[in-house]
Length: 337
Ligand SMILES: *[C@@H]1O[C@H](CO)[C@@H](O)[C@H](O)[C@H]1NC(C)=O
Ligand SMILES: *[C@@H]1O[C@H](CO)[C@@H](O)[C@H](O)[C@H]1NC(C)=O
Image 1 (cartoon, rainbow, N blue to C red):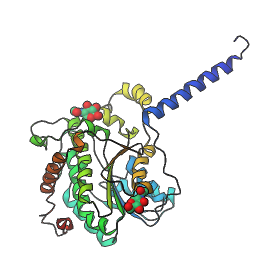
Image 2 (cartoon, protein in one colour):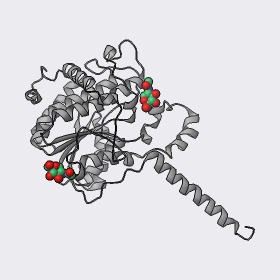
Image 3 (cartoon, helix red, strand yellow):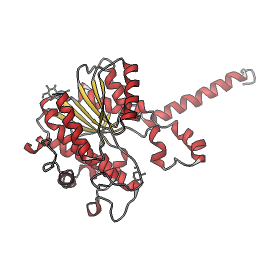
Image 4 (tube, rainbow, N blue to C red):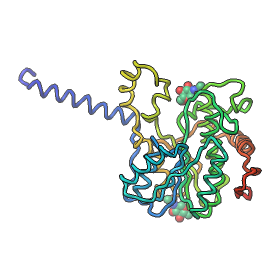
């Protein structure tokens, strides 16, 4: 030992720590494998909600890289334009478009769909990615608690209004971005809109459970149409960390906790891997109503598989979004289903 050069001991020590950490990180974060570059999507038309930042932006970027025509559906059109410019310069794919779609306003969702349909006659991939997390109690334009409104109801309406186009474009896919938080959620039918009491975490978890429940119910309704729908958990991603843990304002947190934790968290690029995999992997062409994390099929929570809860939530969502009886001129073709 005495003869062993000290620097060698030190460097191999560092090597062991780094190597060990990488293995540990893979173990904790998971190592969703990237879908091979050879899987192309040239000419496919897709919509990604909430795509001006984070996982949504990386998802749009990767779809563009693989040749898709991408519609970025965003609330903030300025931020969307900036992200679009980045995506185009990175991928050299000119077919990337920004469209206004505020999921907290059913009118905006309807307008987005009407406009989309005047431009495109097909839709191959819909990625319901947009979402908000743990905000103070606010209401959507139509008076729905914000997290349930955006994460679930807005996407419910969007998806249903696009079903005719998705069906006529079959085989086509819907990817719903949920979260591991769904496993802690319960659907509180007594106070779905959190009027009697509001807990930001509970409302978030409820909205994410709603995503998984709807994925299952929708998959059942779409049996035999060639439209498949699956839910994914992207992992806990760095951009969401502060909001996820309520750390945003603490100096201690930004100095110590975040750098430490961020080592174990995913980058938005890694966060997008599972969405891309579920959107494009040829091996999943017959998979529907399932839940994926780290590019692998997983079991969702027991609540998320309860068909009675799913049907009750569906019925409520139809009413709250006025799916069949909107004053708006855009016809709701799903009414025929
Ligand atoms: C929501 O889910 C998260 C993640 O699973 C959990 O840590 C948290 O305690 C849950 N919040 C509530 C109020 O259930
Ligand atoms: C999907 O189903 C079709 C028809 O049953 C079958 O031909 C095809 O091989 C299946 N694809 C996969 C990846 O299992």
